[in-house]
Length: 89
Image (cartoon, helix red, strand yellow):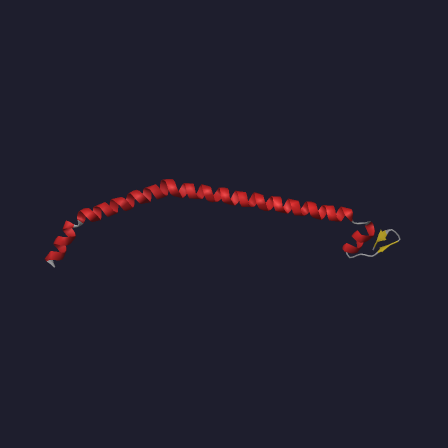
């Protein structure tokens, strides 16, 4: 038992070094790497959001072009109505 206590006491410099290394790593992580990762994550999400918005706008432009190309009768039919005598019912 005394040998174990002596070994632990002699290994205290390693324990102190390990604790200091852990504290330094934690400080660097909290002060430097985490904010950089958050910033990078925001930038990636922003880029994905902009790309999705552009895709939606392009799809809407194609839909508008298709609708503008329809005749009044075809538009009435697409909306589920019946085109008779120039009117949609």
